[in-house]
Amino acid sequence: MAKTICVIGLGYIGLPTATMFAGNAGYRVIGVDINPTIIKQLHQGKIHIQEPGLEEIFYQAWKAGKIIISETVQPADVFIIAVPTPILPDKAADLSYVVDATRSIVTVIKKGNLVVLESTVPPATINKIISPIFREAGIDPSKDILVAHCPERVLPGHILDELIHNDRVIGGFTPAAAEAAKQYYSSFVKGGIFLTDATTAEMVKIMENTFRDVNIALANEFALMGEELGIDIWQAIDIANHHPRVKILRPGPGVGGHCIAVDPWFLVQTLPLIAQLVRKAREINDLMPHHVVEKVDRILEEIQNPKIAILGLTFKGDVDDIRESPAIKIIEYLKDKGYQLNYYDPFVKQSQFPGIHKNVEAGVTGADLILVLTDHSSFKLLDASNLLQRMRTRIVFDTRHILNSVHWLEAGCTFYALGTPDSLYVKQLGD
Ligand code: SAJ
Image 1 (cartoon, rainbow, N blue to C red):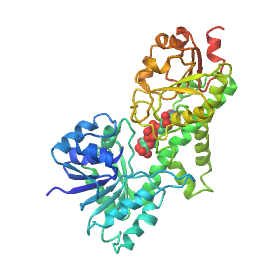
Image 2 (image 1 turned 90 degrees about the horizontal axis):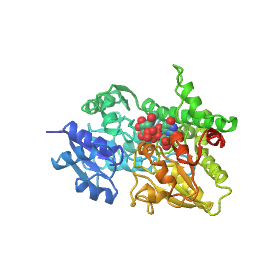
Image 3 (image 1 turned 180 degrees about the vertical axis):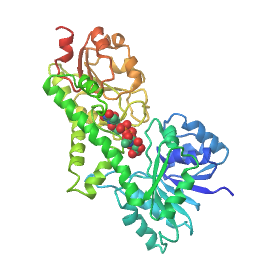
């Protein structure tokens, strides 16, 4: 009989993972979530997230009865925990969803079952928080059951491809647990699977996202320097990146999403005296939305009752996710300062963000400033002349270096970009 896998948490990671096990690997999958809206939608064979290719595979697996949706945890051979681990206001990890999921497993787990934690957690969470929950229930996590950490590492927008082709790390509470988890994951993972202990795997995952956060902070700090030095930092980065061992990332209006802006805090929380660089990088990236707002203030200083057209709300380009988006923070700050705002984002629905315009023309009509906050690929194709003629004042501020400045300047506007001095593009126009 096919083995049963119970996936707890059907969000951006749990749903694609459940679909992989059911669709590609032929297991019987029970998908569990506590959100009734999500459950209702999945019960109709539809998915609640936008991820290329996912809906079709999910629908096929759901129609074939290989994936069953449930509001409660059911007995299974394997339990996969894929619930969120946000941060609390004091920047400590909120492990309540992980703890609740573990407790719900305790009620149905049997000897020999495997529990895999996919959620990103502070180092030693399996040893210090999850194992004691099983022990308190009279279950020995080193003998009676198998417990492992297999952190997700996929990039939103590329989830299916990365689930299959990325390498994975699996850390076992015992070596046998790591081996057992590998058996299941190798049914769809084509990348390498590296086995280690649970705490090392927890650390590996946080190190990856911290590496990216620190490097984005460096790019952002360079951008601030570019503005002060009177140079175009994008050009400088482009030239520097021709060095064979240099790969500077892209500056931007801040770091969003619920991973890179969150996970480094787990290190600060665990090792506050050592994690100095990690903390500073977080602070620099968190400063960027304020920097964008200061620059907007300067740009619009002379304009009466200024109206801003915000282009892009999601935390990064070509995804539909506005959670923890720097754009949302910037919007809050601008609203507090009394600016009138219009919004456009081709990936965001009215239900996600009420008041958003359906087309970009309506979004920019009557505006004094187009403020680009997300690097959606389609923004490269915007018709500058058509949009500029609908504005009251023709000013553009691109925080993502996604617009073609020459094209926009030729169409007739004042152009500003993050990481460049205010005068740069005006000078290029020969004013
Ligand atoms: N960003 C920049 N400049 C850059 C790159 C990114 O400002 O050069 C910003 C983005 O605009 C976004 C934020 O950083 O606001 C995060 O975007 P991202 O594409 O770097 O990462 P996520 O959050 O979509 O996914 C990351 C990935 N981790 C790494 O690349 C190390 C992914 O592989 C993880 O699975 C995911 O976090 C996760 O769930 O932990």
